[in-house]
Image 1 (tube, rainbow, N blue to C red):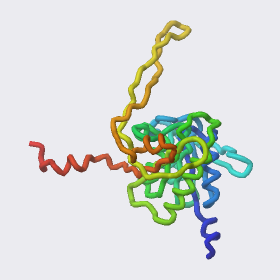
Image 2 (spheres, protein in one colour):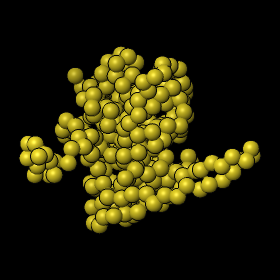
Image 3 (cartoon, helix red, strand yellow):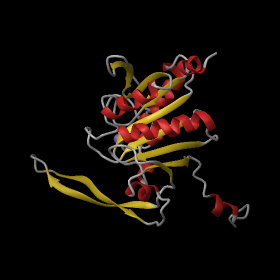
Length: 257
Ligand code: MN
């Protein structure tokens, strides 16, 4: 079989957390279509910062959705992780060869990884045994230039198709808006949000609170994702869902006391 014939048979699942209507998922589906057949299965609404939540107490419903003139998708009234689980078990006719999540509108570098629905869709795919890549653009704007994030995605897909990915590892890409300067391996910057809840009063005189905050870097090094991004490059970080603190664990006895 020719190389092209093989590529046409590849199935790529595309999801996100900004919802199936977001420009970022169209941009990602476009890139995916260069590598194979594409299935877009994504939340039917904004699901940013839901992390790895899944829907347990409510039914999931699936609605066909027109992505563009060439591509249809399926919208799910659930979280990003729900979408990947449901795609895996019920919605895809065959198992995907690759799962992509994004392109998120906003950063998923540093501590954002732990809150991110975009990253969790990719992580869920890794848990299910599929190679997976999460992609985010540092610019929130829905009209941001995603061409650099798209090009970084192409490079990462080529890498994964050539080298594969070890079990349990997900790739997390962040790219500045605009054209790609380069894609560099990086580690997650130890960082946290310094947050303030802005208090206001609604028209019925009841107080409400809205989160605001800025990211604080507690780490140093040219190899941090946030610093690679500051230098204008896109970053790619291999991440894992095994949350065991191995170094600490190895130092412990069998029983605590
Ligand atoms: Mn998002």
